[in-house]
Length: 216
Image (tube, rainbow, N blue to C red; front, side, top):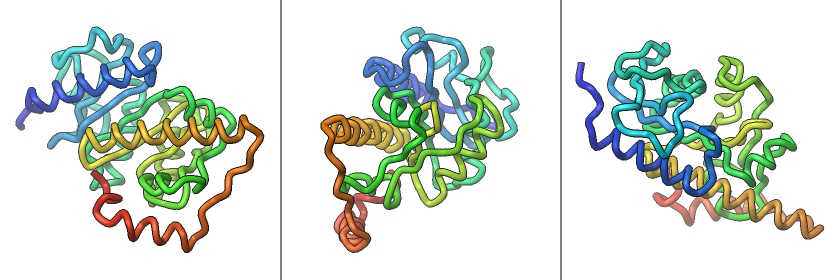
């Protein structure tokens, strides 16, 4: 079977290091993956992103068996493989611990339709999942449930998951979730209550987005 090409591995490393530089993945937290013919290429466990190289990435099948690489896959490999198994349209998964979205997840609250860009997540809100211990099958199941008809979710007391057809799309969505969380928390910190978009207004948003709102 063919191995993942070097360009894909380099893209994954560059994306991980860029998100780390933004403070989205502190202390080796968070993880990224790309779908491959055999499963997925995923960032390894316990390696600082500044030291990450294409050779350090790990390819696994959807059962978690290591197919290529000498390091252990990310502790969240179950979450990634569960998404690829359940969502055939997903070509990449980005999981971050970005500060504002993670703070909101620690209140076990999602993001309502306070801004039209919420529609990039695929629906009228960005949900927060039920809580489950990191690295477990239970977390993968909770994540999948929260991602139902959505492209992004918060993980309770944990962080953010975003999927995309491409790595660039998943990364952009994860960054937008963080931006929305920052705006939402700023609004609440100012003592203001958000005025939520109505169903009719959201329908207009989705119609206006057209192809722009599709999975990228």
